[in-house]
Amino acid sequence: MSKDINRRDFIGLAGSSVGVGIFGNNPKSSKEADIGNIGSKGPVSEIQVLVEKTPFIDTHEHLPPESERVSNKDNRDFTPTPDIGLLFSHYANSDLQVAGLSSGDYNKLISWELSPKDKWNLISPYYEKCRNTGYLLCVRESLKALFGEEDLSEGNCEKISEMIREGIQPGFYRRILRDVANIEYVQINCLKSGVFRESEPASDLICFDISTVGIASSIRNLKSLNKFSGMEVTSLKEAHNAIEHIFEKFGPKAIAVKDQSAYGRKLLYERVKDEDVEPIFKKFVRKPSDLLPEELKLIQDNLFRKCIQCATEYKLPIKLHTGYFAGFNGMDLSRVRDNLCDLVPLIKDFPNTTFVLMHIAYPYQHELIALCKHYRNVYADMCWSWIIDPVSATLFLKEFLLTAPMHKIFTFGGDYTPVELVPGHARIARKGITLAITQLLSEGWITESEVPELLDRIIHRNASETFDLPRVLRAYGV
Ligand SMILES: [Zn+2]
Image (cartoon, rainbow, N blue to C red; front, top):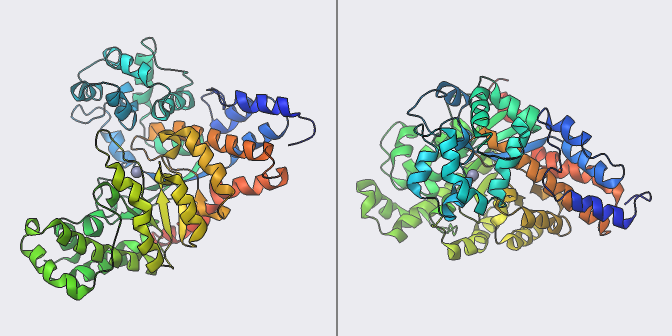
């Protein structure tokens, strides 16, 4: 803390930054608007300025191709409709439904059949009940960042809907991600693209993960492996060859491997010998549905370990979903609780593989800090965590930085399908990072001189060192 600011002023400033609007309400550019609005000298504003101007490397989004959004702008068979319903089509929809919105009414919210006003009237009782959650806060922060609007209401829902629709133009991803959210580039895991997005190339703005869910960790049939091997896979050896072929084809073009098998199974990927799996695999080839769950698990364990071997050869970090489940009324918390314990055998068996454990394994984030502190090859990714539980995410960052080496944390991934909600998430993340670093400084855990290097690392450099975008661009000839 600098000498020209006493402790009470400092706490006052930090306290005021907890309120909505910490980063200003100017819709122009977050970089200009947010810095100009603080109006105070001293360490708090310096930290805010640094956090604002350092571009994020965004390690996790689910964005569909921009061309798909643009070409379906007026397609009445395509949902979510480009109006206020879109703002509630990811994550916020879960909180609204947990607060009582029926699934029938949710479908109306994202459809073309209601006007924006009718949509607002449909959701407003539930909106009020969960307006303070991170998911809903993110909707409002996105409104501020994109349109300069403070909140959604009956009075502005038509206008905001029109601005959402008008905003969908060629180049709008770059405008929203770079100009509004100050994100350098985004790593995309498109849930509709299967193993890898082949429909568009990586660029200086976007790049893609390989998904191992359908070919290994959660494999339930041979469709994907057959597709990439160009033949019917009939043995475990051929399945391994198909996986090798997939990595030969996409490994150089991928930024990482992403796997969210934790939604469907335990993360205990045991070492299973090929000869023990081969007879079960024959049965799998004949009729996958004949397998017992424990037999299917052995196949998945074996194939996923094969993927990890290949990913390691191509120097691809393995990003794993850990912790909390998206959606509602479906989370098996006991399995979630075991996620990190279950991963230890894999972490030990592949010491040269970089494991990036996502979403801070919420609500088991202390186990993640322990693993990052103890194992050289485990990294923490805060993607999604800022809107699941903003206060815990802030605390996590403080705890992590005083416990584990600082190069092992990535602080932002919006985890969104609609690009329009990424700026709000980025604002919440920047606010949490500012609070965490400000508090560490005020509590005397770090010194002012350490702050610039620390911020550069956690916002940008850690990700740029761990994920090799120049390699990916070379593979595309860029
Ligand atoms: Zn995700």
